[in-house]
Image (tube, rainbow over all chains, first blue to last red; front, side, top):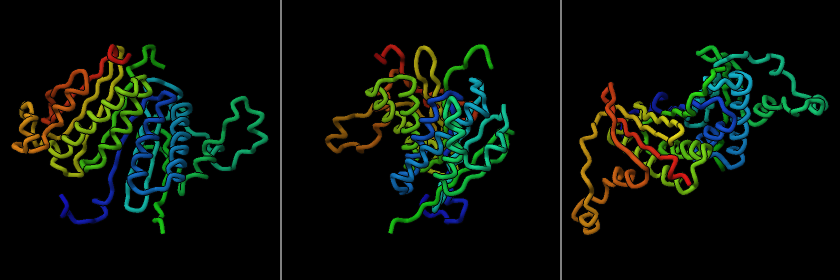
Length: 154
Length: 147
């Protein structure tokens, strides 16, 4: 219907994905989000950043929030607005997020000392996305909400 | 942790607006690649899923963006099952095989090939009854054809 009034409600479109808590399946959401971002007109660089941030958020949800439990799901909601894409990732919160991980940037010296060289996910998400919030999902799990703004090409 | 792993599955939903079928196509292709479908079968699946979503958007949900198209993918030992669900504003009324000669000669509209195409691309497909009155198109890709 082309002649519906263009109020705010009509300018928002939502795509929902429920993924299995298994590493590797974050790719499904990354490909879906990249498809939407391309359609919205984001640059290749920003799309690559979005893919990386989403991969980090979902692997965190699988590994930490859902503790690799095959019975749990990861919910990814992609909200398309005229000037931004909002991506939220929610887990089922078997393990609440460690608040101390949210604040300071990790130190490279500390990472070298870790066997997995990990701990950079949240820092990376903040670097790549324009706005990032960590909250509790309506289902009680952890939720990260990430926004990227669409800057029109001159 | 559960003792027996449930089958791997993916559920997604999109608004009923042309263009969003591409998001489903990418997501389903990605899922199919992960479970090990070969690239030719993935391409067939992408086309079949796009056609199914376009039917759901255009007919089942009459292009009302606030109505959702649901897509469920389940991977079990014997194959991949994909269901595309709509609200059934227009119900599936039995399949009529398209007359390709008529279409080529311009005696029939060029459109209306979606279900025919889907049936050629997947191993089995058919409509299921939905308790809430929507259309449910079920498509299956068997494991044996993955080689």
